[in-house]
Image: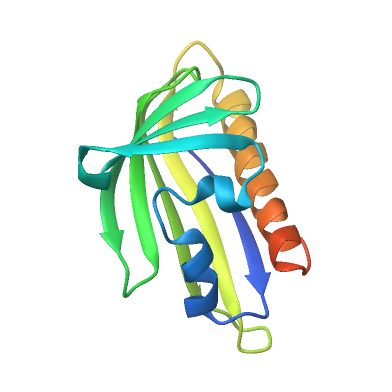
Length: 142
């Protein structure tokens, strides 16, 4: 099993950040590479399209509003992985009493090396958090 992650520390409180990123269908609001999302199955499936026209279907596995976290799996994707489970979480930060955002995943690569797949997801998550920092008008991800 492989894994990847990216982090971002913000001066904003977790509740403020969660209002922006906590909706399972909210990616197009802050991640410019996601051009469209459509929720189905009572909000548990999201159909995404990226700016290159690739389609993804992801299933919400766990949603915890109080803990500011959700986990999702890939149902359909042009990325060759299996057993994918990602988590987006916002926790209290140690910098200026703000918040810490972590986007992480575990998966099994198919037709690509662990290193290639890990780099791909790290790049996606880092780009998303960088876009979020720009959207919120502060810093960049670690």
